[in-house]
Image (cartoon, rainbow, N blue to C red; front, side):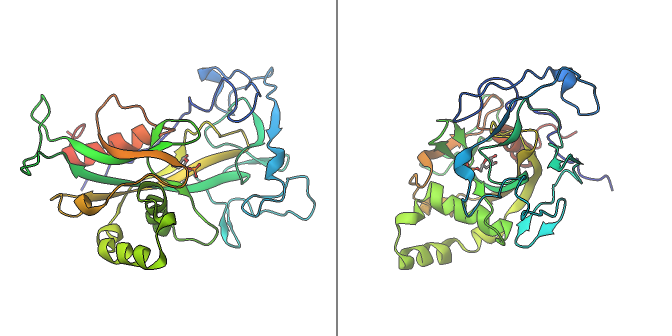
Length: 288
Ligand code: RP5
């Protein structure tokens, strides 16, 4: 039997060029053919930037110059995973190297961890239907897949309602917790309401399928710190479960809605590539 095709992100665009988020630091120019560390780029002199406010934050690493900080690169380090889905990354002069290549900025930027910063992304999907329950078809007669998107408060872009994995947290737990916080606004629910919600959707959210694990082309990435994620698809084939979801933007999200998954959609970071993979799995688009 043929192995399933593995979907991978193998280059980056969004974390090259331009101004680094929440700063006025300009990234050093990295042409397409100079991304790879194995290509010589003698003139490469990226600025070094680590947001000073990260200092002392409980969720952030200390500075790499701190002699008490001894990270276990490429390993599980206490409750923190410093392993990359991309395989072992290199350490050069004590600094972890972005597995995709140059970004035009060294340091940690505004990311909490040196090396991989792990997130989880829930992709909650259903078929678009009329009030009568009939599935809506597009102009090629294919059913339209819809997913829950949030509008990010920081960039204003539409995105999957994902978030960072807390130390020691199971990644599946992160995906559901972030969905609750950003798309349901569970942070304002009472403990009882949250328990009721969890019981109601427990089965649905225990049956997620991994659709992607790996690097994310996130504008916060640097040469020494980068985002990685696991994306889970929670699909409601009959549309009988998610109707009761009651979407309300919460936490870092300023909007939430069901969005048609179209080939030209543009989402935060690598979320459009993840969505395309989900569409492909449900509709067979791209399969021979
Ligand atoms: C993206 O950033 C991940 O795919 C995830 O959606 C998100 C996590 O960062 P925050 O939303 O917590 O800022 O790279």
